[in-house]
Length: 128
Image (cartoon, one colour):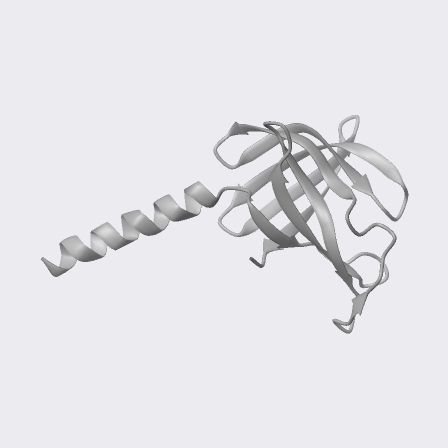
């Protein structure tokens, strides 16, 4: 009986994680200045977008940014469970927008920005 209850809890935990999907807030990798951002993903017309909610310096102190509230990630489509493509990512440091794809595994989101066949990937961690 105990093992049946444990199995049920494990199955429920997996369902909750899948249902949550890309929703939530992710902490970016630090930029060249050691600053990180908190990006919140949401449904934007049947696709997924990610808005910069807050920024922090290398010491963890919140800093003001003119980019707060702007979409960093736009128009991503879920290609398969945990795989997103067809959207763009905006780099506030360079002001450039790149084709993007993302892969979610647990609480780690691998985010790639690509020009032609050259891609740069960061791993963002879900914090909420």
